[in-house]
Length: 187
Figure (tube, one colour):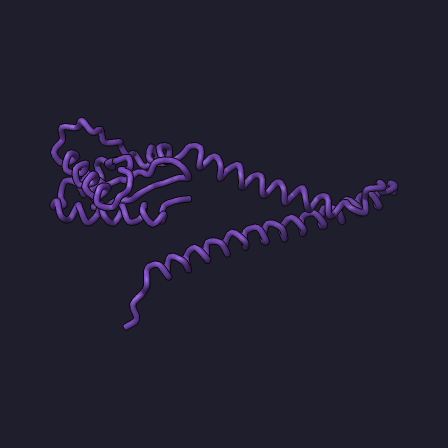
């Protein structure tokens, strides 16, 4: 039975992500090229059928349109990516309905979650992420979010902090800290 080395698997995943980004850029360039030259050909046909004289910049029309289409695709992608990073972790959390846990909470289950999270942060030498609970969720689950330079967020379902024992909760929280520590959740 072959065992998987986590760090090798993570390196492979990073390499695949880079390849997907390169493929996206190449596909965008191909689409831009096809649209640009198809547009230029249609423009030439329309001008010729109308008996109009082609403008002097006509020889570079396909390249110009291709570059404009590629720039449009790239700028559109970049703007949406920046919007996602600008709205950040809190906006994504609000979409899920997660509620931030206040450190002065009097709920015993939330206090236990805070204590466990502080212990794991101290033990792992990382900063304590913002802590959230997903109310009225009957599943036992947890996830982390981290966008660019923003503080990470750790979210657990209400059922997880209610039904799990302290040691089980420690395991779940430690697992999520590992994602933060290894930058698995960074964009």
